[in-house]
Image (cartoon, rainbow, N blue to C red; front, side, top):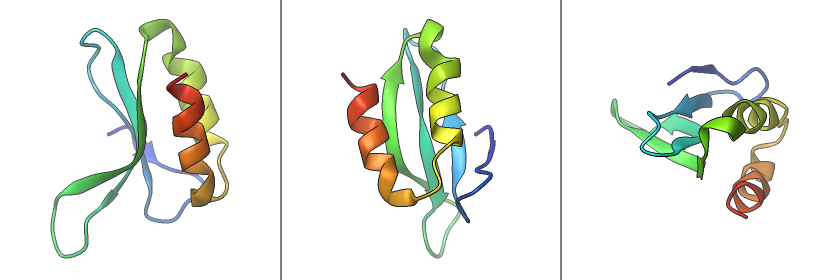
Length: 74
């Protein structure tokens, strides 16, 4: 987990270790427990991680997370 999203309440930016690519996306806590669930995620090569995180950071509507995910997986 990296940080709380600046515009989406209860949503956090997340990034995993590069194996070989980074799993990057948005997460939120599941109701009633300490478990996190992905809202959107994609495997991103190391050279694309900053751009992917910037794009996620710019989202202002959670409905746009799916479009980010589809674009990131292309």
